[in-house]
Length: 198
Image 1: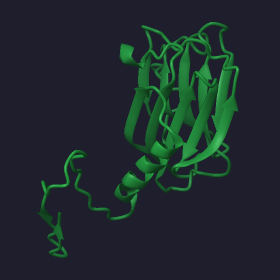
Image 2: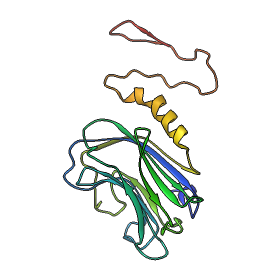
Image 3: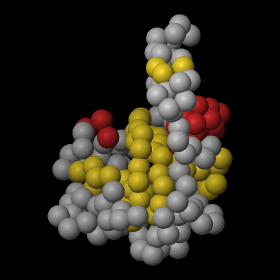
């Protein structure tokens, strides 16, 4: 954990790629909280539920457990890579959940979640921060976790998804390139096909 992740009452955005095979229990993807405080402290929790839906929760550090949340429709523990974008827009008092660049759920305020600041918090990926994780991610795989203060727009969410989805197809071959130049800075040769990757 880092104080940069103590979002307070500010807007924030969380993005992550994930893949789950059929989940029969709740499995945490991202968990920010104190190890033993339960829901009595500010907490951010993103998890795949036993009902195969992705839940994004904010727990209130003021009123001890009051929560705002949204969740994905349908089944998404299908062993396919998906991208989640979870956005809290404090000015509009809303939570947004995007899956694969598409808005799937909105929780409209007033947000009960108050401040999300806790100097004693821990950040855990793939389980809770307790010494024995409550919801370990036993069927999940994750990549490219990003967190930031401020909101990303629906257009930016879609652009990020479109730019990154090629990295998550079967047998993908990718070279990560500079975002500030179109000059060729990476070249490689595929030893199996002899194709040149630029």
